[in-house]
Length: 184
Image 1 (cartoon, one colour):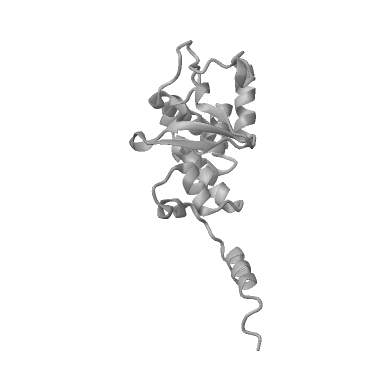
Image 2: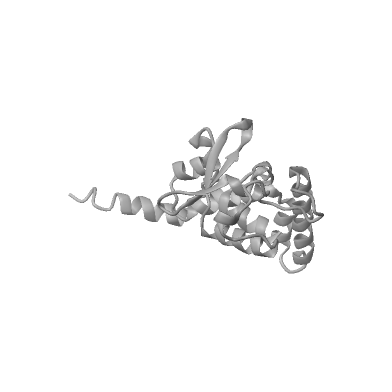
């Protein structure tokens, strides 16, 4: 589950994209960046950057699965997400159920200590990681079109739903943008 959480948060993948990915779908470019080629919504092909959190989670996960860490030694047919019962992979439905169980368990543990967080976690789903990925990237300064492209949204208006402006930050940014104007 740790791999799914870190990799999902770092990449913003849909559950179906994660369960459909194989090690052969990962490539590095000449700049040293790692990319995961996916088939997304509407059977559209796309690619997602693998930031350090995702690459680190994958490396740790491969070691735990007793698989080679070096891409040169990978069997390209190996599912990115293994199954606990020895099958080749896991279905999106099974991943969804496992994650809902995880979030429900976490919510139950936190219910007495932090009821508000427990309530949020009780409603969480695999898609929640996608929302968290987008919100975090945007709040950390990634451009709207960069996040749109990584999520493979058709429109920037869909991605803009993840923008969460607070009044203090908005006032500071607009003030800085217009700081030299109006002084005559």
